[in-house]
Length: 258
Image 1 (cartoon, rainbow, N blue to C red):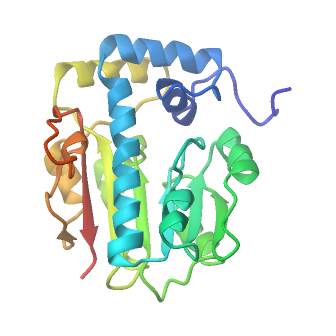
Image 2: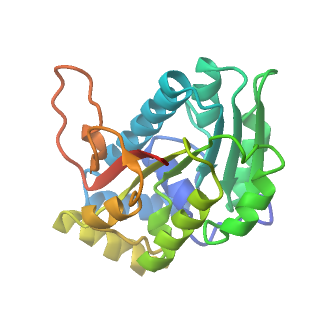
């Protein structure tokens, strides 16, 4: 039986992405949009996979080599393999993770499936990305904002229609965390006609996603120390030695707050 809070008549970005990743937590309306997006941009499923790989790499680096133990994952999406808390707590079991999403299905699955290690903590916040004050207030119940935090925002800032507002959200979140915190962003870019066409398809579905230029993605990291290799196609962020990865219409970076 479907949760009455879940609107199955409109596509959800989390459920569409779940479908493109081969998941089963989606409805007919999501699959219909997913196929329309795939027709417009045949590489879109690989974009979804590249973003997942990037998240795993970035969290592994930050929890391991960097040594951060707190993660604020905004725009969680539906649980899949190697979720943020699983990656972080595999490296450091005492890691504390707060997931943020406003899709009722995501929150239902998160509470059921995203269980913390005994040494760490995992919590969930029901909020839109456009409400950073609520996110920070709720997350403060689990995270200590006097200590460094890694902010992960994978495929979420494109849901904010106005770029200036998206920049302001990132600025507000970064203002709440101390020196030594990190920002992890990956978002879709208008770097090909196929990508732009997929944006048109999404808009016609009533679920618009706003593509940015690579320069706009870089703007999120103004004032931060950006780790090598900089702001690059997500598929080309620290690829395995010897591998050759084609650029995709999605860019990313990891930056440290000085």
